[in-house]
Length: 79
Image 1 (cartoon, helix red, strand yellow):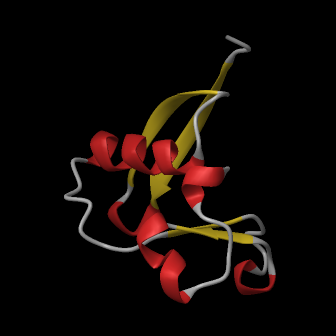
Image 2 (cartoon, rainbow, N blue to C red; image 1 turned 120 degrees about the vertical axis):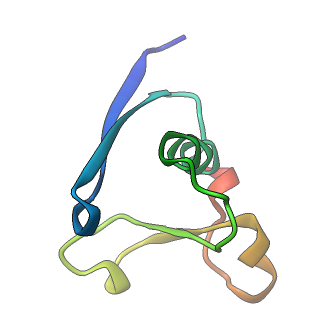
């Protein structure tokens, strides 16, 4: 084990946040599952991770595995 990331996940519109612990070996897909669990979400939507908050649509992005068949971006279970 090489350590942990501690991430603060915020939903500003709802004025709520959670701190999520993530081992460095986990994928973005695992992070998605952690976020879903932390907020009690149903996991009923597709999702992306963007690496640039200032201009997310011009940055590198990762898509959920279910979207891979129609999107050429890397999937979250590979990173």
